[in-house]
Image (cartoon, rainbow, N blue to C red; front, side):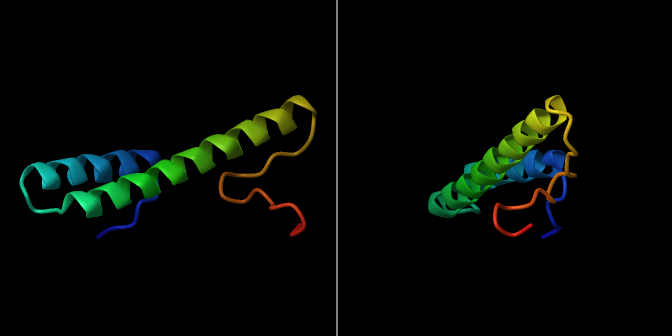
Length: 74
């Protein structure tokens, strides 16, 4: 499987999972696990965007998505 590099890739992946389940090619439990993983990624992206928005409003430097320092590891 190709890597998921964009939100569009993730949407396409989830659509493919739904089709695969509907066709009986993928087990519902496997699909559920994939969907939960994508939800965690989406939640993480949303959080990172909100942090960058707060930094920008405070006049601080922002980080590109995926590069936000984790507290204590700067």
